[in-house]
Length: 222
Ligand SMILES: CC(C)(COP(=O)(O)OP(=O)(O)OC[C@H]1O[C@@H](n2cnc3c(N)ncnc32)[C@H](O)[C@@H]1OP(=O)(O)O)[C@@H](O)C(=O)NCCC(=O)NCCS
Image (cartoon, rainbow, N blue to C red; front, top):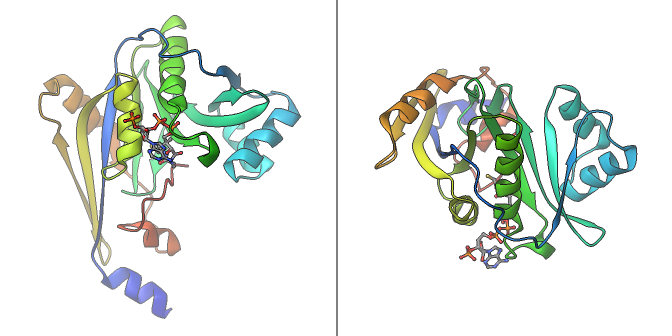
């Protein structure tokens, strides 16, 4: 109870940057094999993804069942890097907003390169592979979001040729929540408008999840 009151009393804020890519480019490097895990995928791959990302097999299966796909970069037999892809709305815990991917667009979330494999540009390679597949399948654009201070992620996203669209700043004090959406310098006005339409209020949580607001650089996409 004490923790809850402190949580509610302290003003909290967080900010994420949204990026987009409207057309695919050639893959950056063939440094890894890229697989896609979908519903009904091999059980051992579900388990391997769960193990490499610190989740349970049930969590991975639940994501697949609600239509998300997982793109996997392998180095040898190891799963080195993963990202999740959705066409349906996803909740961003940091700002407690829901992102509704525009019609024909794909949202990339919960990306992770395992520490042993970081710094080899597997992440931008995976993002470029996602864009390549999506555009080949007739999809339009792709979106991704990073916490404003996650410079490593921003480097990878820029390398994969995504462009910043805007920053969403979420703030919460007591039961009041507000957010602001600022266009990135030079971002086309129609994309900033699209971002504004795509962001909607998330569920009002009074639980510990609000503790993440303004907390450490934790990736908490669901
Ligand atoms: C962000 C993340 C996905 C990047 O993955 P990656 O495969 O290492 O990506 P890159 O190799 O392109 O690294 C990105 C930048 O960080 C640098 N970097 C990565 N790991 C590093 C390390 N251990 N030491 C120093 N620099 C490092 C890279 O050199 C690169 O900069 P560069 O373009 O100037 O070379 C990875 O660090 C990660 O999983 N972080 C935790 C989860 C997270 O933040 N996910 C993103 C949520 S949107």
